[in-house]
Length: 229
Image (cartoon, rainbow, N blue to C red; front, side, top):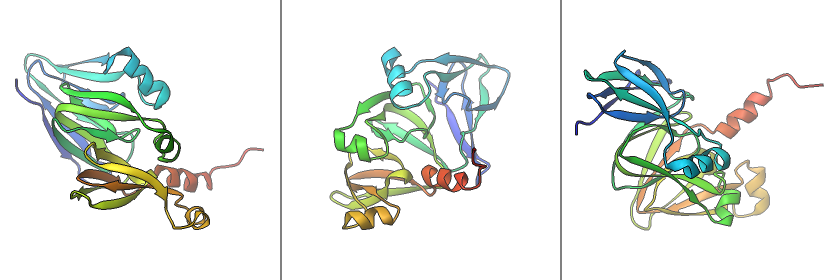
């Protein structure tokens, strides 16, 4: 079967993805991600992972219930996909590899890519910043993720550790393990520093980190919004 060709264009603060679809081939994308397309592409809504999977994404993760499905007609076609946030985009080739995704980081994928919801333990659910449920992505094919700010990749060797602030975490390979720890040695320093809890990863595997924190940006923006009352 012919594969979809994905290309990141307009590099900079607001990149987008061009997807070139062979005849009869489909992709699925985040709701509202379609920016423009050639006339020969049909659009419909779809549910990935069954109704229960869609409910868990929507109710437990606060993500979309329906995905956007784009299917090329007999002559193929192209579509431009734009994420909701300004930031980086990364194209990942899955060959049996599994990733866990931060909420809001999924942009698009080929239909052989599988999405499901994984339950985290109590400590990670309370303090990781991701809640009790994370999105698990597996199967084979191309996955597109997006970030808030630029995207950085860190490849960890077996046993190598790396610490990431919860709000900067985007995606991590299932081969890595992580625990939630205080940012500093003491509780007071951890919270007065503004860091609180962090994720301490251990390799092997790859983690993706965004250079801007949505939570910090929301706090900065709130200082300039008019107060009620």
